Length: 67
Image: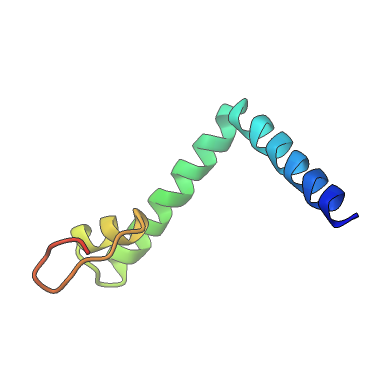
C-alpha cells in the first residue's frame, strides 16, 4: 500500500516536471524571480558577488573560496 502511494506520488511529480519543461513561460517566471531576489539582496546591502553566491545556492569561506 505504501509502495503504491509513493510510486503514484513520484509519477505525479514527474508529470508536473514534464509539463513545466514544456512551458517557456515557466522559465521566464523563474528567471524574473531570481533577478528580483538578486536585486533585493543587493538593495539590502549585499555585494553583487555575495548576492550571486546566495542566489546560486553557494556559500563562501571568509577567504573568498567556496566551501
